[in-house]
Amino acid sequence: VKELIPEFFYLPRMFLNENRFAFGRRHNQELLDHVQLPPWAHGSAEEFVRVNRLALESDYVSANLHHWIDLIFGFKQRGTAAEEAQNVFYYLTYEGAVDIDAIQDPTQRESVIAQINNFGQTPQQLFTKPHPQRRVLPSASVSSPLFCARLPSAPGVSLRTSDIEFKLDEPVGQVRLIDGKAVALGLRKILMGPEYSSYLSWGYCDLSMRLFSLDGEKTLSIVENVHSGQITSLCASENGRLLVSGGDDSVVGIYRMMEIRKQRRFFNLRSLCAHNGAITALAVSRACSLAVSGSEDRTCIVWDLNRLSIVRQLCGHETHVSAVRVHHLTGEIVSVSGTSLRVWDVNGNLRLHRQCASSSDPITSLELSHRNWWEPQTQMYITGHRSGLIRVWRRVDRAARSSLKLCTHLQLHSSAVT
Image 1 (cartoon, rainbow, N blue to C red):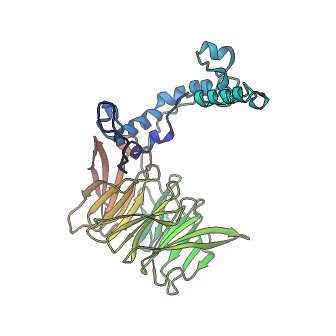
Image 2: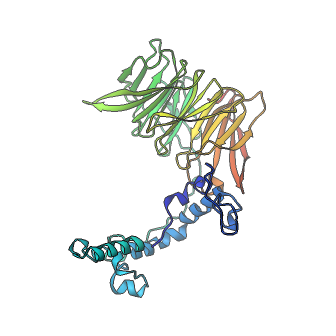
Image 3: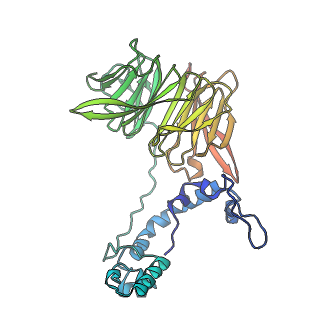
């Protein structure tokens, strides 16, 4: 049984020989290099993976997935049902077909092992009855992309809501969409998952960061000596267990949050040094095991969260990096500098570069869509600008080239969108 490995559905770089390995030549002296893709991919590994993923996530596959389960793990794997479905393989491939330890003849034993290695092994049978069909639900129609809800009373948290807007008593520093509810926090505050019942705050004269609960403004934890200077940026993973901090001392700190005797404590795993200027932007993706820091030195640095070491540096920004994001599914990194937006692949190759505004209206905030990236209409980028303008961009991938197309722009604010 031969099946496609998961990388066929999310990792385009797998098909490119970017490390320039020498694989030799064919019999006709043709050089072996990148994987030759089918014509419908138009020479683009990204398009090949996108179409594969689009087919995998299609309603047709969802409606017929139970047939595959029956063949591989279910009642059609063995017996009369397998014969009728023409799903019969060599007998040594089935689990328990032969007891290797009971074979006394060494030559025969090695022969059986060689045959098993050659033919492979059929998975263990898990079901003896037909697997139920997966229900394919119709796409839900959403009348409004934003739903606002009343939040607990706490300083810097939205109290009054309407159909389309929040009202804070201070500038907005973070907006998160959680379970269909938009939650807004003030400057120098970030929400902590996974329950989102607390938030971290920084910018105090003692250079500390403090964890508060949303209900009652109770202080849960205070962490001092985070940086030798002032904290300039914080970013937390979706589950709230990993925290990345940046300061004006050019250092990136990696912290682990643990609950000990019902007390939340932060432990410094490592302080990472590679920038030559203050840290201005941070992003973290636990799914991709990486963090990205942007700095006044006009570079982004990608950090490996498993080894806690530098992976690569992303250069070419015109000014300081004002925002960075990591796509949790593809590993792509989006960075913003001045009016420029750049998209880098997981190996640090520049995939897209776009000037999104005039020089007098730089980008001050960035968000991107993590849903259904394989569908062309869902690869969206949202940029907020100093003038208060919000622009929505759609990414268009054609062959080996990518571009951004402006879908709409909204003038909802009279000052910078942060």
